[in-house]
Each structure stands twice: as structure tokens, then as C-alpha cells.
Length: 140
Image (cartoon, rainbow, N blue to C red; front, side, top):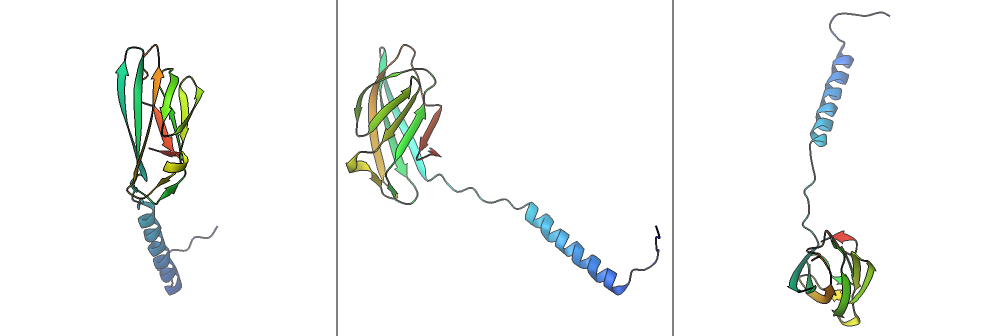
């Protein structure tokens, strides 16, 4: 291997300068992080507990583009048995998982709009707040 010492040629200096400039741009790009957008929906719920059960209402606020048709999914920390339901079709998937879909009159949630639905449930241990809650597959 032959190693040459001395001052680099003009072409070498230009190439080295361009390489340094590109490396600087790559380094600058590598540290740029995108801003996180606000969630398109907010989900808030209320619980009214009574001995052996509760009444729950879920409020969906649309902060993004209009929604035409929705499915909510939630998982509870302990089992509950679904009872009376209003303003949605709710299906109990397992003792701790449920889904709700819109009815014909509340399928559309305009930007800034709110839809609410609710249900009663019975339980042996109060389930508390959902540990997972999504709307159309997006975290609420």
C-alpha cells in the first residue's frame, strides 16, 4: 500500500469540502424530529357505580376530519357483563373486551362534533376505567 503525504490536490480539496458539506446536512437531518399532531379524537367516559354494577357513558369528540361510521373498542381491567345499551350497537367479545358501532342516526361525527352512547354492566369486582380504548383503530 502506498501512502502519499503532502498537500491534497485542488480536486481532492473540493471533493473533501463537498463530502463535509453533505455530512453536515445529513447530520442536521438526522437530528430533526417531526412534530406530533394532536389526536384526531378524544374519548371521555363517566361511571356511575352502584352495588354490583355501573352505568357508563362514552363521549367521542372529533378533532379531525369528519367521520362517517365508527367502531369503538375497549378492554376493561376486570370482567363485566354487558346489560342495557343505548345509542350504539355494543358487542361483548370476551369478559373484559367490548366493541360498539354507530347506529344509522349517529354514524357521522363532523369536525368538532360529539357523539355519546352508554351501557349498564354488572360485575363482581368494579372494572374501573378501560386499559385500552380506540376509535376506528386509533387510540383515544
